[in-house]
Image (cartoon, rainbow, N blue to C red; front, side, top):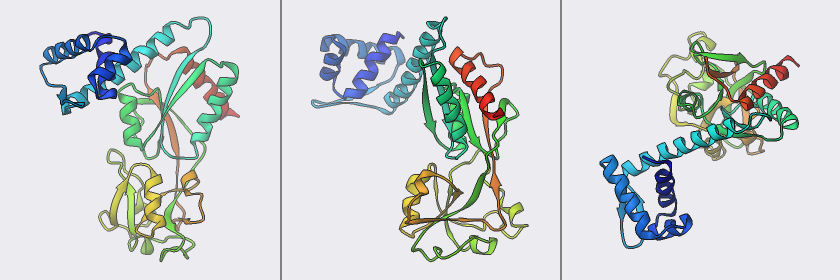
Length: 294
Protein backbone atom coordinates (compact mmCIF):
# COMPACT_ATOMS: atom_id res chain seq x y z
CA UNK A 1 0.00 0.00 0.00
CA UNK A 2 1.57 3.28 -1.11
CA UNK A 3 1.28 6.62 0.69
CA UNK A 4 0.04 8.13 -2.54
CA UNK A 5 -2.85 5.67 -2.57
CA UNK A 6 -3.78 6.64 0.96
CA UNK A 7 -3.77 10.32 -0.03
CA UNK A 8 -6.01 9.51 -2.99
CA UNK A 9 -8.34 7.55 -0.71
CA UNK A 10 -8.60 10.43 1.77
CA UNK A 11 -9.39 12.85 -1.04
CA UNK A 12 -12.31 10.67 -2.18
CA UNK A 13 -13.51 10.33 1.41
CA UNK A 14 -13.35 14.09 1.85
CA UNK A 15 -15.01 15.08 -1.44
CA UNK A 16 -17.54 12.18 -1.39
CA UNK A 17 -17.38 12.26 -5.17
CA UNK A 18 -14.90 10.51 -7.45
CA UNK A 19 -14.91 13.23 -10.12
CA UNK A 20 -14.45 16.07 -7.63
CA UNK A 21 -11.64 14.20 -5.90
CA UNK A 22 -9.93 13.59 -9.23
CA UNK A 23 -10.08 17.33 -9.98
CA UNK A 24 -8.52 18.14 -6.61
CA UNK A 25 -5.76 15.59 -7.16
CA UNK A 26 -5.19 16.63 -10.79
CA UNK A 27 -5.65 13.10 -12.09
CA UNK A 28 -8.27 11.68 -14.40
CA UNK A 29 -11.42 10.17 -12.97
CA UNK A 30 -10.81 6.73 -14.54
CA UNK A 31 -7.30 6.66 -13.08
CA UNK A 32 -8.59 7.48 -9.60
CA UNK A 33 -11.42 4.94 -9.85
CA UNK A 34 -8.94 2.26 -10.87
CA UNK A 35 -6.66 3.13 -7.95
CA UNK A 36 -9.55 2.82 -5.49
CA UNK A 37 -10.69 -0.47 -6.99
CA UNK A 38 -7.11 -1.80 -6.69
CA UNK A 39 -7.03 -0.68 -3.05
CA UNK A 40 -10.27 -2.54 -2.30
CA UNK A 41 -8.88 -5.70 -3.92
CA UNK A 42 -5.63 -5.37 -1.96
CA UNK A 43 -7.47 -5.03 1.37
CA UNK A 44 -10.16 -7.56 0.51
CA UNK A 45 -13.08 -5.35 1.50
CA UNK A 46 -15.47 -2.78 0.10
CA UNK A 47 -14.51 0.77 1.04
CA UNK A 48 -17.16 2.75 -0.82
CA UNK A 49 -20.87 2.75 -1.50
CA UNK A 50 -21.14 4.21 -5.01
CA UNK A 51 -24.25 5.97 -6.30
CA UNK A 52 -24.87 8.27 -9.24
CA UNK A 53 -24.44 11.34 -7.01
CA UNK A 54 -21.99 10.39 -4.27
CA UNK A 55 -19.29 8.04 -3.15
CA UNK A 56 -19.76 7.28 0.55
CA UNK A 57 -17.57 5.31 2.94
CA UNK A 58 -18.60 1.91 4.25
CA UNK A 59 -17.80 0.90 7.85
CA UNK A 60 -14.49 -0.55 6.61
CA UNK A 61 -13.88 2.66 4.71
CA UNK A 62 -14.37 4.75 7.86
CA UNK A 63 -11.89 2.58 9.74
CA UNK A 64 -9.34 2.95 6.95
CA UNK A 65 -9.90 6.72 6.94
CA UNK A 66 -8.94 6.96 10.60
CA UNK A 67 -5.83 4.84 10.11
CA UNK A 68 -4.82 6.65 6.92
CA UNK A 69 -5.02 10.03 8.64
CA UNK A 70 -2.86 8.74 11.49
CA UNK A 71 -0.28 7.22 9.12
CA UNK A 72 0.07 10.34 7.00
CA UNK A 73 0.29 12.53 10.10
CA UNK A 74 3.13 10.42 11.47
CA UNK A 75 4.91 10.47 8.11
CA UNK A 76 4.65 14.26 7.95
CA UNK A 77 5.95 14.60 11.50
CA UNK A 78 8.90 12.32 10.73
CA UNK A 79 9.78 14.31 7.62
CA UNK A 80 9.62 17.56 9.57
CA UNK A 81 11.84 16.23 12.36
CA UNK A 82 14.45 14.65 10.08
CA UNK A 83 14.63 17.74 7.90
CA UNK A 84 15.44 20.22 10.68
CA UNK A 85 18.94 19.44 11.91
CA UNK A 86 20.27 22.96 12.50
CA UNK A 87 17.28 24.82 13.84
CA UNK A 88 14.77 23.62 16.42
CA UNK A 89 11.56 23.14 14.47
CA UNK A 90 8.67 20.74 14.22
CA UNK A 91 5.41 20.04 15.98
CA UNK A 92 4.69 19.40 19.66
CA UNK A 93 1.49 17.37 20.10
CA UNK A 94 -0.28 17.84 23.41
CA UNK A 95 -3.36 16.02 24.64
CA UNK A 96 -5.02 17.60 27.64
CA UNK A 97 -8.00 17.43 29.92
CA UNK A 98 -10.01 20.53 30.76
CA UNK A 99 -8.11 22.10 33.66
CA UNK A 100 -6.53 25.41 34.62
CA UNK A 101 -3.23 23.50 34.88
CA UNK A 102 -3.08 23.70 31.07
CA UNK A 103 -1.87 27.28 31.49
CA UNK A 104 1.50 25.95 32.65
CA UNK A 105 1.91 24.12 29.34
CA UNK A 106 0.70 27.02 27.23
CA UNK A 107 3.07 29.40 29.03
CA UNK A 108 5.94 27.01 28.38
CA UNK A 109 5.02 26.69 24.70
CA UNK A 110 4.68 30.48 24.31
CA UNK A 111 8.20 30.93 25.69
CA UNK A 112 9.48 28.16 23.43
CA UNK A 113 7.96 29.89 20.39
CA UNK A 114 9.66 33.15 21.29
CA UNK A 115 13.02 31.40 21.07
CA UNK A 116 12.17 28.97 18.28
CA UNK A 117 9.47 30.42 16.01
CA UNK A 118 9.44 27.40 13.70
CA UNK A 119 8.01 25.15 16.42
CA UNK A 120 4.27 24.57 16.12
CA UNK A 121 1.74 22.69 18.22
CA UNK A 122 -1.23 20.38 17.85
CA UNK A 123 -3.70 20.44 20.75
CA UNK A 124 -6.19 17.71 21.51
CA UNK A 125 -8.73 18.04 24.32
CA UNK A 126 -10.42 15.08 25.99
CA UNK A 127 -10.82 13.30 29.30
CA UNK A 128 -7.98 11.25 30.80
CA UNK A 129 -9.10 8.03 29.08
CA UNK A 130 -9.14 9.59 25.62
CA UNK A 131 -5.88 11.48 26.13
CA UNK A 132 -4.05 8.42 27.45
CA UNK A 133 -5.29 6.34 24.51
CA UNK A 134 -3.78 8.86 22.09
CA UNK A 135 -0.54 8.84 24.07
CA UNK A 136 -0.39 5.04 23.85
CA UNK A 137 -1.03 5.12 20.10
CA UNK A 138 1.69 7.72 19.54
CA UNK A 139 -0.76 10.40 18.41
CA UNK A 140 0.31 12.88 21.11
CA UNK A 141 3.75 13.46 22.63
CA UNK A 142 2.58 14.75 26.00
CA UNK A 143 -0.59 14.03 27.96
CA UNK A 144 -1.96 16.37 30.60
CA UNK A 145 -4.31 14.27 32.73
CA UNK A 146 -6.40 15.12 35.76
CA UNK A 147 -5.81 12.80 38.69
CA UNK A 148 -6.35 10.09 39.68
CA UNK A 149 -4.28 8.45 36.94
CA UNK A 150 -1.84 5.53 36.90
CA UNK A 151 1.51 6.89 35.70
CA UNK A 152 3.70 3.93 36.65
CA UNK A 153 4.56 3.13 33.04
CA UNK A 154 5.22 6.76 32.07
CA UNK A 155 7.73 9.45 32.82
CA UNK A 156 5.83 12.39 34.24
CA UNK A 157 5.82 15.73 36.01
CA UNK A 158 3.36 16.66 38.71
CA UNK A 159 1.91 20.14 38.25
CA UNK A 160 1.56 22.48 41.25
CA UNK A 161 -1.92 23.78 40.40
CA UNK A 162 -4.86 22.04 42.03
CA UNK A 163 -8.45 22.18 40.83
CA UNK A 164 -11.42 22.52 43.15
CA UNK A 165 -14.03 19.80 42.74
CA UNK A 166 -17.67 20.79 42.83
CA UNK A 167 -20.99 20.85 41.00
CA UNK A 168 -22.03 23.19 38.20
CA UNK A 169 -25.67 24.24 38.46
CA UNK A 170 -27.99 26.62 36.65
CA UNK A 171 -28.34 29.96 38.40
CA UNK A 172 -32.13 29.65 38.39
CA UNK A 173 -32.26 25.93 39.16
CA UNK A 174 -33.47 24.61 42.53
CA UNK A 175 -29.80 24.32 43.52
CA UNK A 176 -28.77 27.81 42.42
CA UNK A 177 -29.11 29.37 45.87
CA UNK A 178 -26.69 26.98 47.57
CA UNK A 179 -23.17 28.00 48.56
CA UNK A 180 -21.70 24.49 48.67
CA UNK A 181 -22.65 20.83 48.19
CA UNK A 182 -22.55 18.42 51.10
CA UNK A 183 -22.69 14.62 50.78
CA UNK A 184 -26.35 14.68 51.78
CA UNK A 185 -27.13 17.20 49.02
CA UNK A 186 -24.99 15.49 46.36
CA UNK A 187 -26.98 12.23 46.45
CA UNK A 188 -30.19 14.19 45.77
CA UNK A 189 -28.92 15.98 42.66
CA UNK A 190 -29.54 14.74 39.09
CA UNK A 191 -25.91 14.46 38.01
CA UNK A 192 -23.95 14.41 34.79
CA UNK A 193 -20.58 12.76 35.49
CA UNK A 194 -17.41 12.24 33.48
CA UNK A 195 -17.44 9.39 30.98
CA UNK A 196 -14.03 8.22 32.25
CA UNK A 197 -13.96 4.47 32.78
CA UNK A 198 -10.27 3.55 32.82
CA UNK A 199 -9.64 5.82 35.79
CA UNK A 200 -11.99 6.65 38.62
CA UNK A 201 -12.91 10.33 38.51
CA UNK A 202 -13.12 11.39 42.18
CA UNK A 203 -13.03 9.29 45.36
CA UNK A 204 -16.35 10.47 46.74
CA UNK A 205 -16.61 7.64 49.27
CA UNK A 206 -13.44 8.79 51.05
CA UNK A 207 -14.40 12.46 50.71
CA UNK A 208 -17.79 11.83 52.34
CA UNK A 209 -16.47 9.46 55.03
CA UNK A 210 -18.61 6.71 53.55
CA UNK A 211 -21.83 8.70 53.30
CA UNK A 212 -21.76 8.55 49.47
CA UNK A 213 -21.52 4.90 48.47
CA UNK A 214 -20.85 3.53 44.95
CA UNK A 215 -24.07 3.46 42.96
CA UNK A 216 -25.84 5.85 45.30
CA UNK A 217 -25.53 8.92 43.07
CA UNK A 218 -28.47 9.89 40.86
CA UNK A 219 -26.55 9.79 37.57
CA UNK A 220 -28.71 10.96 34.66
CA UNK A 221 -25.94 11.02 32.05
CA UNK A 222 -22.24 11.28 31.22
CA UNK A 223 -20.08 13.79 29.36
CA UNK A 224 -16.63 13.98 27.82
CA UNK A 225 -16.07 17.75 27.61
CA UNK A 226 -18.02 20.04 29.89
CA UNK A 227 -19.20 22.59 27.30
CA UNK A 228 -22.34 20.78 26.17
CA UNK A 229 -23.00 19.42 29.64
CA UNK A 230 -23.04 23.00 30.93
CA UNK A 231 -25.97 23.76 28.60
CA UNK A 232 -28.05 21.14 30.41
CA UNK A 233 -27.04 22.72 33.71
CA UNK A 234 -28.15 26.13 32.41
CA UNK A 235 -31.53 24.65 31.54
CA UNK A 236 -31.86 23.22 35.03
CA UNK A 237 -32.10 19.67 33.65
CA UNK A 238 -29.02 18.35 35.43
CA UNK A 239 -26.08 19.29 37.61
CA UNK A 240 -22.52 18.67 36.39
CA UNK A 241 -19.89 17.13 38.67
CA UNK A 242 -16.56 18.67 37.66
CA UNK A 243 -13.90 21.25 38.47
CA UNK A 244 -13.76 25.04 38.68
CA UNK A 245 -12.09 27.79 36.63
CA UNK A 246 -13.04 26.52 33.17
CA UNK A 247 -13.86 29.13 30.49
CA UNK A 248 -17.14 27.40 29.63
CA UNK A 249 -18.40 28.09 33.15
CA UNK A 250 -17.75 31.82 33.18
CA UNK A 251 -21.34 32.94 32.62
CA UNK A 252 -24.02 34.49 34.80
CA UNK A 253 -26.32 31.59 33.90
CA UNK A 254 -24.18 29.10 35.82
CA UNK A 255 -22.84 28.74 39.33
CA UNK A 256 -20.02 26.54 40.57
CA UNK A 257 -20.70 25.07 44.01
CA UNK A 258 -17.63 23.58 45.74
CA UNK A 259 -17.98 20.35 47.63
CA UNK A 260 -18.11 20.62 51.41
CA UNK A 261 -15.81 19.46 52.94
CA UNK A 262 -13.47 20.81 50.28
CA UNK A 263 -12.03 18.41 47.70
CA UNK A 264 -9.23 19.25 45.26
CA UNK A 265 -7.47 17.27 42.55
CA UNK A 266 -4.12 17.62 40.83
CA UNK A 267 -2.78 17.05 37.32
CA UNK A 268 0.24 15.39 35.74
CA UNK A 269 2.03 15.72 32.43
CA UNK A 270 3.08 12.29 31.18
CA UNK A 271 5.03 10.97 28.22
CA UNK A 272 6.11 7.51 27.10
CA UNK A 273 9.12 6.12 28.94
CA UNK A 274 12.26 5.66 26.81
CA UNK A 275 10.65 7.61 23.97
CA UNK A 276 13.10 9.26 21.56
CA UNK A 277 11.83 12.82 21.27
CA UNK A 278 12.09 15.13 18.31
CA UNK A 279 14.20 18.30 18.84
CA UNK A 280 10.98 20.30 19.20
CA UNK A 281 9.64 17.99 21.93
CA UNK A 282 12.99 17.93 23.72
CA UNK A 283 13.04 21.73 23.72
CA UNK A 284 9.45 21.87 24.96
CA UNK A 285 10.14 19.50 27.85
CA UNK A 286 13.20 21.51 28.82
CA UNK A 287 11.15 24.72 28.74
CA UNK A 288 8.34 23.08 30.72
CA UNK A 289 10.76 22.07 33.46
CA UNK A 290 12.14 25.62 33.54
CA UNK A 291 8.62 27.07 33.75
CA UNK A 292 7.78 24.79 36.68
CA UNK A 293 10.97 25.77 38.49
CA UNK A 294 9.96 29.41 38.21
